Length: 179
Image (tube, rainbow, N blue to C red; front, side):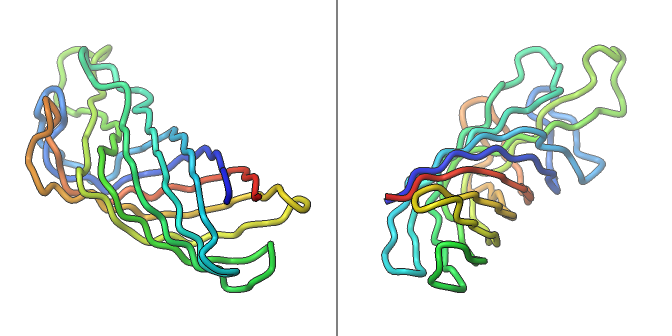
C-alpha cells in the first residue's frame, strides 16, 4: 500500500469554447498553472502498481465573474516499473472522469480587468504517463511524473460547464509513503 501527495504545473492544447463567455478558442495553448493530487496505490507485483488518484486543478489567473475555481477529476492509474528496485523508471496509463480547467487570455474583450476565461476539458479523461520513483529510505519515495491527459467530451455540457476536447500535459513532483 502507498500514499502519495503531489503538486503539478502544465499546459494544455485546448479547443472549443470558453466556459463563461462562450468565446471561440482561437489559440490552442492554455496554461494549467497549479494542480494538487492525492494517490492511494496497491502493489500488485514488484513492478505493477494500481492506484486511485484525485486530481484538483486550480485555474489560476481566471478573472471572468462566476468562473469555476476548481477542476476536479478522479482517475485510476496503472504504473509498470522498468525495474523491481525501489528506485525505477516507470510507464503508466490513466483513465477516469472529471474536468480539467485551463485559463485562456481572451483577445476580444472590452475590459482588461476581465480578460481571462476558463476552458474545460473532459469529462472522459485518459492518457499515458512516464516517470521516476526514487527511494528516500525504506518507506519514503520521491515521485516525478509527466502525464498527457486527453479530455474527451462524451457529453457537451456538465452542469454549467461547456466541455471541450484537449490534451493537458502535467509535470508533477510528489512524495509518497510505502507500507
